[in-house]
Image (tube, rainbow, N blue to C red; front, side, top):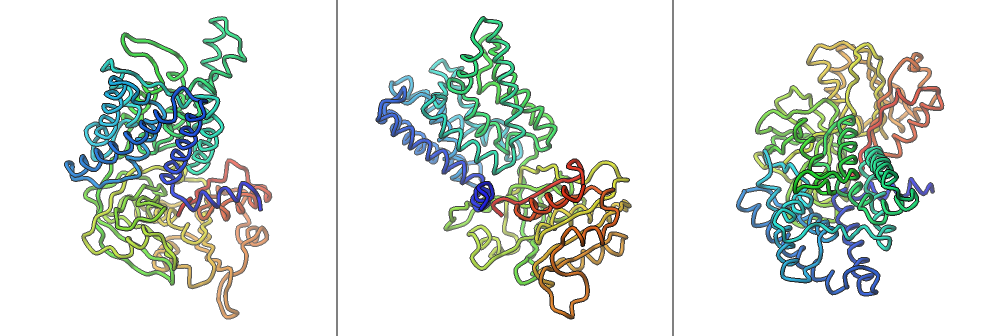
Length: 503
């Protein structure tokens, strides 16, 4: 098996939050081991004391504040924040350091409720906590995680995270910006370029902050161009060593400035939805409809994070990323989900929801949206339930009376898996060509069937080289058709991809 495919299969089976939580916990355990071995600036006992104090206080404070603010609690979030603080703040080796640590965890948890708008925090909790502690004069963030000893472990975790959430370009721009600025400043100061680059990776938290903190979904912009500018801003401030009065451009300050930029350009709030109905569309596909407390600002094709607290949460947690299947103009919000026999606790809880039950939705994001050029011909290829972003797009086109040359190709295992018959019929009546292709069909099935390959592509879409292709579905399916299209002569710039990891 392709090693990268094996990694993706693993990543697709775990949520982003669980990946970060388990990864940080593993690196923390490694740090404690090296602490006892004398390879870090702090001893194993000091690190254990810091870890226990932060995890205990963080969990308790978060739970208390959630109750006061009548908000849904999320243990994963508090644990991740506590672990990040563990890596950037000094252990409680003195009364002053202990006070600083207590203030840091208190501010970090409180920032999610106090420094927030519409139940969505503005700043990365650990970064704003480090800034506040610095202003008190009790201490500052040491970022002791930036050591040659821990670098291989933080780098591995960072690579997995950016692969999981597809933020390699953001990290690459951030890291490149940091290296260019640090090199320029270092050379002007007469330093050796080799020393500058070594220090950038081993003495500065470039990897840790760039992969774990910079990419936090709730405090970064939602669109690709905005994310690139965000990475550029944070990278320049991170490396510039600027000083304005009592404030220096430390890593935490750089990230906080980036968070402000993300907020100003329109970070979306968290909203509550009330469950309305559940409709079975096929043997394993269900459509869920919800009523929002107010209009949701998203673009057709975008996805959002859904939080559903429930009992006996399994290893995949109580948060999921689902594409919104309904039109942005609709008064209802729909999602389509495939429910297997051995489903996650999240999906089981979703299946058990009763009318009026609440779920929280936020972090509307994604660049998988319709192109601005209305004359551009489109071919939308969906694998199974990957049809959901296309439902949103096509409903929007139909309801706004927009005319575009669009072909929808829906690939499924069998005719029974097609689902959404009513919506597909409606699209066809409005001039959108709909091609459903079950891989396995009986001899009397009317329509295309079998494997949708290059020959079928060229036969059904003779003008395919004039079209922009949108691919949505499981990672393996998206990768396969991306390769097929490239070999068929479709330009890379005419292929947009979307896949669901951890679905």
